[in-house]
Length: 179
Image (cartoon, rainbow, N blue to C red; front, side, top):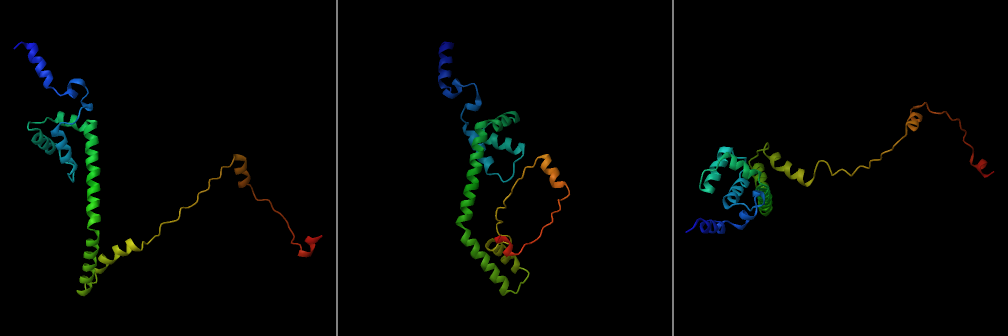
């Protein structure tokens, strides 16, 4: 088989996005990069670089260099995918909390009753204060305060700072106004 035919077969095997684009940022994520982003999104703390390389190598099924890891992390598509996964994780966590909210309130009330029955008076505020703070907040939402800005010229400001003018006046009886 001539070298040209081999080269053509190899080029045919290259994905179209790789052959068309020299910019890796415009290329879709490789499967191991997607798996790595998904793993990274569910970590409670940011894993060390060593842990990240180990996990990326596991997904890639070959050693991943530190340089390659940084290149993946800086890829705009990877960053967008990771942010989307993290936002989805927060949404799912909120849904779980909302789903079990009534159960949590019942457990809270049961704990309050058990503390009362056991005469554990130190524990009762731990159950009652959070409920009261949610139902009857200490500070009601403050009404939006109106702010008025007055712009004065330097002459007007000087007049305000001057000594006030004294005015003498006399109150007239109501009959004097009819004249």
